[in-house]
Image 1 (tube, each protein chain N blue to C red):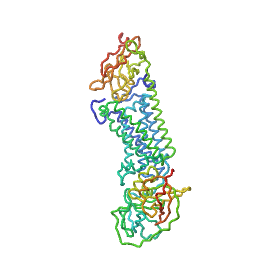
Image 2 (image 1 turned 90 degrees about the horizontal axis):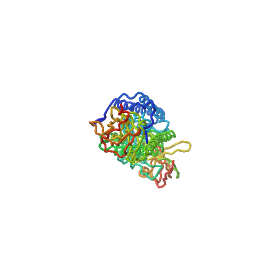
Image 3 (image 1 turned 45 degrees about the vertical axis):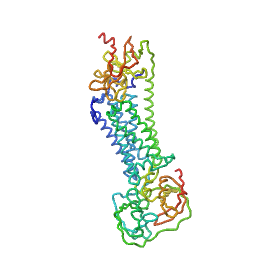
Image 4 (image 1 turned 135 degrees about the vertical axis):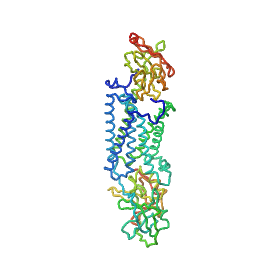
Length: 349
Length: 257
């Protein structure tokens, strides 16, 4: 966490993450270039670069799109999620290089403006056979640019987490646009069956993990409670909640993280103010709930980040009665202190 | 009611915080295996990238190795150079300018004049083109030019792809097809001679320059269908060792490949 904006808040893990990602991307580019040059000696260096950079960017996009749902399905993937934005910027850089090389190669040094050539060089928009493929790539590149340009926490805070998240959901439009770019372009003339199979396998992998994660989320969001006369709902037994962990429940449409820690129980919103991360999948460390995505911290009693940080989440009234945990579904404004329910075991200690 | 995501029981007590190294050991071991699997999959795909594309035909572009050429300028039907001492044995060398531009402007008014010039050779299957450096053209006296041509054929119907002759002969690989369509259009728009690439069932291929019925340029029509398979009707003539199809664009019809 940081209270000031720096270009990158480096730490050892981020350095290692970027070094490994950079090395893997570099190895991919070298292996792909050397392999193609050996097998397809007729190719020019420009064609090798355009193909390889495009393939590297598209492959990395698959990895990026799978990391989120994989981390939802198995929290051991969370370290891959931690610095995913850097992967996104790397992927955009590869895509930009692919686009620039393509525009220079195919659309420059002529009598038309290169962008005019990209968009109107082929006017056969009415035919599937000759449908231009470059506009799909350009559209994807613009979306990826917007995402890369606003990837910093400065934009996250100034746009607000919901707006920022909505903007960054554009990655799915970018992905669809790139799939069309490949199908309408290279698949129409230069591709063998292997490329088609790889494209289908990649899309199937992304679709499958997204679907599984969405199903898990939807199952968790089903409300199964009826309110008692005092308005509280019985969400679980105390012993259902592991020490320093939370049980996430959905009441009145809100995801609520019910934390048990040091003989107490508190309930706060399960939506982190940073990137809407799942606070309920975090852990209490040094008295604070720590978000599993990027480590943002909140006092479980107040829902507020410890000073000097300013993030706040809504809190909920909570009681413990007869070994059961009761939560009132109406949230208090973000940052409102709610006394934790004290467990009998803690009182007697 | 819902709980957190499924996690392996042995990591239940481990919690990863990015800014607090080191990573918990069992999570670190898992991540190590995951990264190796992802990187390994990526490298297998990188190796497969070559075979996943079809083999392309290409020519030679001696970029960065310009040479001096001398001969007699031909302006029509396309700018070309008849090399000195050539009395019909070697086809004309087509002339184009740098970038996606033809050489008509550079050789205008020089038909039949002897020139020396510097340019870069582009060649494919015995057909050669020179990307000239326009400023290098040194004009000599008029010379007696040997016209190497044969009478035209009767009407023929051909199927093939309209390409720009510069990219097709070797500047680009691929120099034809869907991915090259816009580049071909741009080249034709810039004055590079259009050509028709035809292949018969046995795989034998020819490249024919394309003009209108009277030898006039058909640039505007050709750039619209560049990169596409078309069928056309015309007559075939030979000039300077090149086959030329003289065709009325009204007979052109796009066909699926």
